[in-house]
Image (cartoon, rainbow, N blue to C red; front, side, top):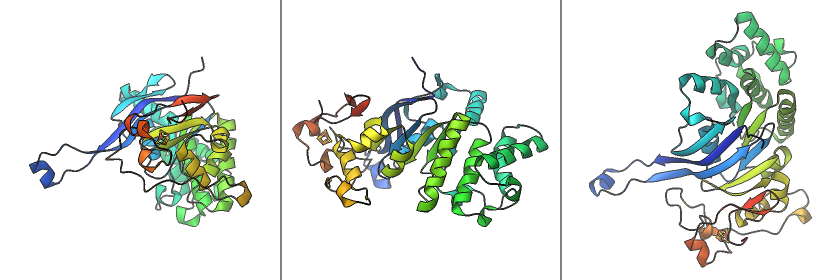
Length: 328
Ligand code: SF4
């Protein structure tokens, strides 16, 4: 059996809500934001696995928990078969070399006072890799890899002297310079102009081939997900409600929430659009997740069983899984 690079098993992350003075006096039970509420998935070598959903669905928290930038409340995370939650300091340091993150906003994620050279070199210095000249060569190579050419003309520039696309390339070079195996890309193109997005997505696809990279790609944009991802997990209120090959899920969705998300995506030709699927009301608060199917207060197909029993993620067609009582 092929071993996944990354595996999350029933991963949970709850954030405590700060209690007010009245809550303490009245001894009200502690409240938690259930940002990630039992998420399970595998990502295989050189695969681009996407987590998609509206903001607040828990996809970014999942990405950060997978990297142990946030400690999970419960569950397990395996990296090449090892539980990273059991790593000691040395193992965690080694893991941090192999697993990197690219953030959404290239304007905020790069230190404006540092040169491009210092930004890309910093991870090498932190991990005490190479001497000054070796590090310089690796910085040049990373800049070349992300198509900032000639790299010598970029090394002494600062972020404000670069375009948005060039900044995101610098962020990718910084993630790449340690030769990672796995990258969490958290909405890496959502802050960029449309014309630049395809360039960055194509760059990520090329780097996957050339460097054997595996990605967890986080996005709210299903068109982007369909373009770049092999498989996709649709998240709603901290849980994956539909999971499968990206094209299959986006072209033939089962879950009413996925259908509603897809029906809201604008298409150049309105005739291509699937009929509008309405959702009732606003996203429920992750502090008060409803019992039964967590989507039931907004679902136009909800019946009694939906209010009483939480549906499990079950296979409905080849490698296509859905958590919905309509598909039993
Ligand atoms: Fe809607 Fe029921 Fe399916 Fe939940 S389980 S998505 S409420 S039909």
